[in-house]
Each structure stands twice: as C-alpha cells, then as structure tokens.
Image (cartoon, rainbow, N blue to C red):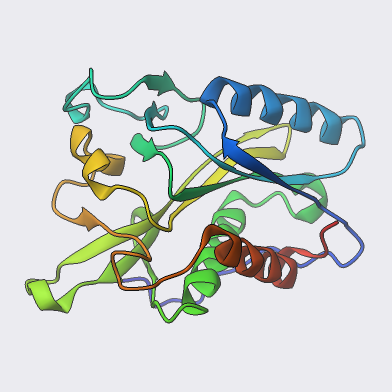
Length: 227
C-alpha cells in the first residue's frame, strides 16, 4: 500500500476542457481515430478534451502485453493499443474516459499526471461509498475484500496512458456494472493473484449518468473547468 504523499498536477482555473459523452457503443478504431484528432487539435492550439465512451466487448493489448496473458484469444476482438500497460477489457457497463490534456502547460510530470488520474477515480468512487486505494508498483485502483481473507483485493479501475509531445491520450476505465466474467479471457493488467470488481458488484446501484455527473464534478475539482 502506498501511504506516502502523492504529488498531483496543479489545477488550471484558466483552462476550459471540452467534455464529451458518446451515447451507445463506440468502436475501438473509432475511439483511436477520435483521440488522434483531438491530440492534433491540442497540439495546434485547440481545446483540451475529455471523452467518455462505452465500448462493445473487446480486449486491448498495451505496449507491455505478454502473449501468455491472453487466455482466450477467440472470445472477443483483440486490439493492439499504443497505451502503456498490458491486457485489459472494455465493454458495456464500463465507463472509459479518454483524456487529451496539454501536459506541457499543466506540468510535464508523468508521475503526477497518473497520480491525478488515480485521485480523480478515488474521489469518484468515494462519492458512492467505496474506498479505492493505490498500490505501489501497480497502476490502477484497488478495493480490499476482507471477506475473502488473505489480503484479497479487487481492481475497480484501470489506467493506461500515452503521451505525444506532452499531450496525453488514452486514459481511465471505471467498472460501473460490466459483466465481470468477460475478464476471464485475459490476465487483467498482468496481475494473477487478485480479482476485479465493479460498483454494482460492491452493491452500489448507480446509473452511468449518475457516475458521469460525479466524474465531471471531481475532474473539475482536480483539473479545472469543463464546457
């Protein structure tokens, strides 16, 4: 467990981030194309953007993915991803938030950026009565499951980013109410000795719209205003 103070990026009250939410499933290739467009716009001096989507069931392989961690290659489409990290799952009931932010302006500090994304998720799930925690050496957010004993914990949110000329893309994925059995086809993020969970699995009855409202509120508290 990481108990040390974690540095965060400074909040920019002078920046207004474009906030987009897509209805219905967004194909992964379409999401990548949209992120590329947004990164290009930020590099050209345009507005930063946060884009909230749900994907159809699929697996993505980050730049550190190991072939042996893909347990069921034929279950869902597998997409190579330029983000950091290993295999992860995306699907209905999971809120994916892609963040195209200007880190040159906000502070060219990747560790602080990841910590800020973690803090965003920690505050979001805390609003629903869930305590999520960082873990040293494991990116993402974890929930303790003392009812299973032996230090059991489950991952509730994943983080995978990429940076181009200090503009970020990819982002975070928060499990709201996905089918958790869909994770059975991979070793999520290369972690074999712990599980996955969701707000619904923890007994939280929250709609995606309700989660989105909290995500936006907590983003603005940490990063600055949205429009």
